[in-house]
Figure 1 (tube, rainbow, N blue to C red):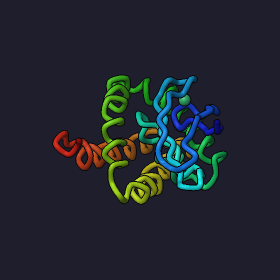
Figure 2 (figure 1 turned 90 degrees about the vertical axis):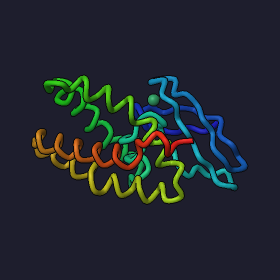
Figure 3 (figure 1 turned 30 degrees about the vertical axis):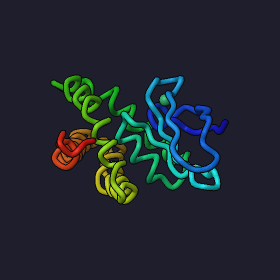
Figure 4 (figure 1 turned 45 degrees about the vertical axis):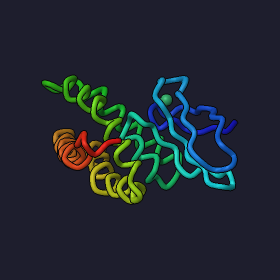
Length: 163
Ligand SMILES: [Zn+2]
């Protein structure tokens, strides 16, 4: 058993990972989201992703440290719960995100360059929107989110791409 930080809720979760390399899927006991842990041949953890949360996946993947990633996700969760859901149509937008994100995450993870894509999303969209949130520019942060989702839906939400 190994302890990893769930990208979905930020809590520690024990995972029975493969010690010989490969992927392990498990359900986070706290938020019930599915977590995917990839290990290399030496049993070292390569990446921890949440199959239903794209933004959390990108943060966890691109973060310089687990602490930094937890900090970013806390800022984004706070923004989601205090600003985003209270927008007119915010609830609908959020359910659209949770509906589409798993498919987008799967499409990205199926690519050979998935780590570059996740790092790019983090650098070009997620970090700028976190900076805007911290500067109290909530509307501008929301525009960045919309641009991010537009890009992702255009590139990764073609149903004939999957499976
Ligand atoms: Zn969780």
